[in-house]
Image (cartoon, rainbow, N blue to C red; front, side, top):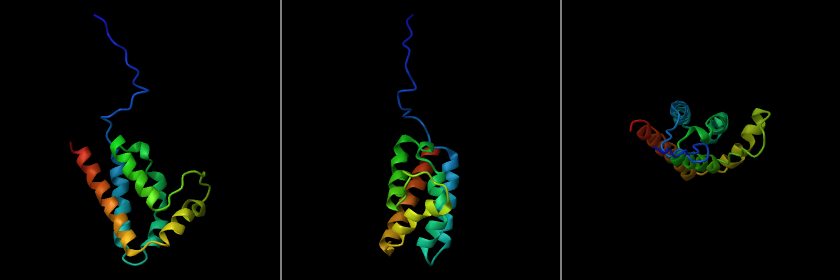
Length: 124
């Protein structure tokens, strides 16, 4: 009997599920944003750490692109190493400072959709 050896390191794991950590942290982020009925742009900059903490590699292949789209939408920039809170929040503050009510609603919809997809993925 001949066994075919596969190189699992080079082939993506299509069955990989997102880490439960992401579900918990995303829920916290959403809760914090929902609590602020006033200046959500200020709250977003206060919550900027979540956008660094939740790394796309912790999500399944199908959901990582959704998280990247959310980070791009709020102005997240991971091209520079972060050495201070100000460096972490500056790009987000600049972008969300220009958000309209429609932008905020779009962001929240994107977050709710990702949360629902994560929960569905983990329950299958």
